[in-house]
Image 1 (cartoon, rainbow, N blue to C red):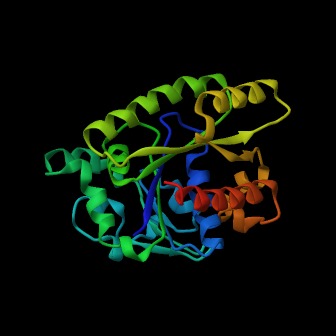
Image 2 (image 1 turned 90 degrees about the horizontal axis):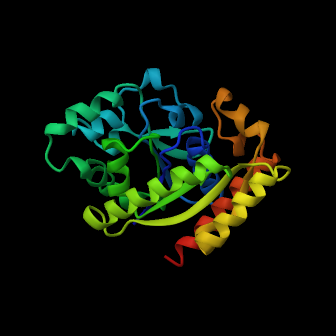
Length: 256
């Protein structure tokens, strides 16, 4: 049965989508069967995997509302060699339409259960807000991967997210736990980055992944070519870091 992980952070612009897409590609490179679930109406993970969101016949919107199943809506990312449950702007309307539905927090969990045996990993790219969509992601997941920059504001947002995860764990999903914190866009030349990084290690201990993702131009360029950074320039420092992170994830789930 697949291990399901949310890539979540309530703060925007912290590299959630970059992490979700490149972790999916890194795990696929390590011969894992991966489904990337795009739960953000902006559809950036869909585009980053090389899929044209304007040409979708069905998407996660139809899946959440029970009009399609995952097997019908998923699309293959040829660039990354993994499957994608894609999203487009229609998904923004799902929030309102789901209000009247039964079991609305678990719509995604029920949908993914039907294909659970077909994958080793399912990665959910959550929107940067605590919405009904994010709540569906947290209810479906076994754990949360939190990408964060090593700066002061990121620490402020982290405490809010940890409290949210605790509430979901207590009331809706007792399986949910924090898998780890991933330091992204890391610049070792900045003293503040080093200070925040050591604070994280002191406070969260082994919940902080050993892998660190550096600031990297090639990772930033890759989405405009419709490719994960790992496949766009495999020799870049960013790509190498995400492949190492994929290997660390495979090791970490053995101890869950």
